[in-house]
Length: 183
Image (cartoon, rainbow, N blue to C red; front, side):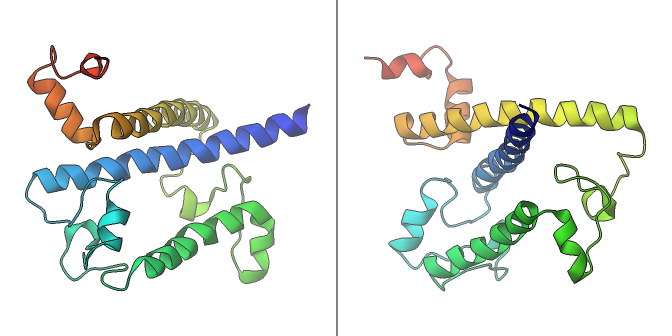
């Protein structure tokens, strides 16, 4: 059924894009922390607990004073996420044509809106390049979704962050691997 296939493709592309952003978002704070940047709590799955149980201040990108929801609490963080993630998601859900009354005109489709806002490098100008980039995006997205699954599992098993696990493995691959948890 073509309509179901189109919807499945849209969902896969959406999840792939979020997974690619998430992988970067959970690794960069840990790398910055290992290099001396004070972020409060750099491990992705420990941040909410640290925020709830202390007066932890979350500095955006480790820049002191640049705060999205510093000492305000978890509800302000949730409100920020609702606006920053909910707004674009709602616009995607209602479709790009519904944005025209507010003065936003996008020439593309729901999956690839186009315009300088979404395509600043004009990759859609050349059809062959656009097709190659579209295939590369979905391939990288699928890898990112699997990587997120791996991060979820390693967090549950090792209780460490992904970069710390990688460093441990690189230090001693024979002993610091998944086999040590099968005892």
